[in-house]
Image (cartoon, rainbow, N blue to C red; front, side):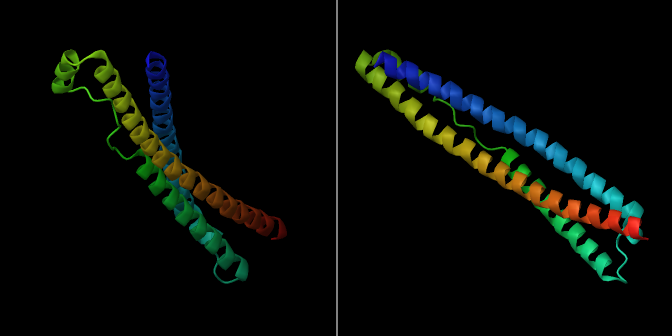
Length: 164
């Protein structure tokens, strides 16, 4: 049982490190998306009329590309914020009552209780980390779609400048 508990302890540390990794990724990604939102807002404020000339089909398509990108960026920001959401990070039980109980029981009951605590906490921690991972994956996918839409907008803008 000692080897099993040592293994569970290592897995718990690994899962905590994974949870922290996703927390850090979420924070960095949220910062990057916030910068993209500020850049898009600045772009439209400065060059909106020139970029979106609605008198020709290419201007309407450009506006559509921009709106699609803006929607994707905002959704990405929302998913990144959701992934970063403060929620309980499962930890091993550490109440005084539990510690007092552990002092009074025999070694077998002690080990079984520790085993159960590790198993239960690992399942909860893995679930919480997977939820963060899923939201961050959505956020990343939405940024990829936004990048494609903005790339199409850039190609159209460059083409119009070259052909003008």
